[in-house]
Image 1 (tube, rainbow, N blue to C red):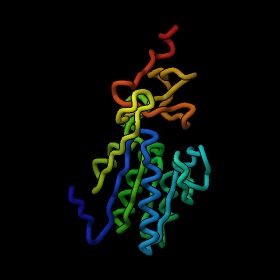
Image 2: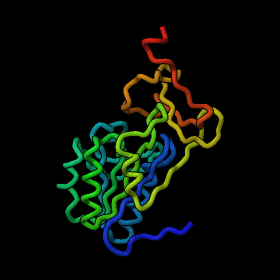
Image 3: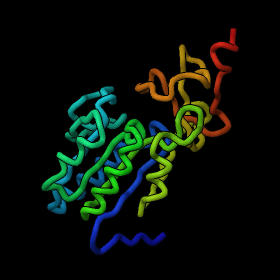
Image 4: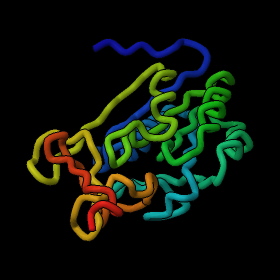
Length: 198
C-alpha cells in the first residue's frame, strides 16, 4: 500500500474501529511523532469523556497525552493558533458541527487526526464519523480481539449486568471494560428492546 501525504495545505486522517482496538493509542502515537519532528501538537476531547482523566487522553492500555476537554466543537477554533497538528479523540461524541470545525482547520493548512468509533453498540454508523470518513485523505480502520472467540473484532458490544444491552438503549453511554467488549460480527448480540423483554 502506498500512502502519499499532501505536500502543502492541510489534510484529515481518521483512525476508527471498535472499543479496545487501539484508536486513542494510535492518535497519541501520531501526535508524539509530530512533536519529535518539531511540530506543535494539540489534542482535544469531548468533555463528556471523563473515564480516566479529564486533562489527558488515556488509552485503555495506559498511553497518555495531555489534552484539552471541550464542551462544544466551536471551542476548538480558539485553541489551535500556533499548532501544526490537531488531534480530536472520541470524535463520535461531538455534535454534527464538528465536521465544519475540522474542515475549517484543514482549510487553514493544518494536519488533523481524529479517532473514534465508526459504529455504535448496535452496529450502526456513529455520529459524524461517516461524514469524516468520506472527507478524509487517510483512513485506518483498526481491529480488536473478540472477547468471546478471540477472532478479529470490528464491533463494540455493550453489556448491562453482563448481558447484551437492549437495542433501544441510549446511543451514548461512556464506559470501559465494565460495560463494553470488543466482538466479531458473529459474536455481537443485541437484546430485545427493554419494553418487549418482559
